[in-house]
Length: 135
Image: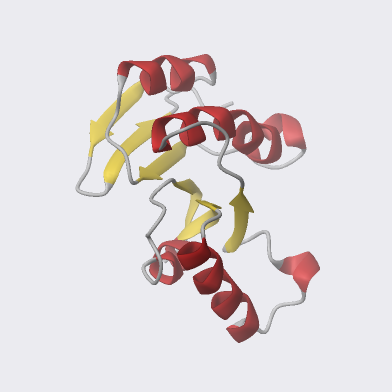
């Protein structure tokens, strides 16, 4: 079942194959572009029977590494995620962000708060942030 209000953000440079399971479960997945992750994304896209213009639902976006570490990659990508998936972008918005590959830090908590996230939970894969009032 697709979590239609959930966006995944993967900053693990070696995440690889689990990307397929994450992308199948959430509305959209953002993943840091590394050789291993990019190879997996290419395989997923080749196996998909959806035309490119219909790949937003369960789709995958790769993003470049801005900064020296996963915390920086996450922080610098949150703005793009919000720009593309908030209700202000013309869609129905999203209320949950699952972040893979890094634990919640004070820097990331502050960055998420700026985008309306107010509930945070550590997970086995990283952390989850939720917007209570939905945008």
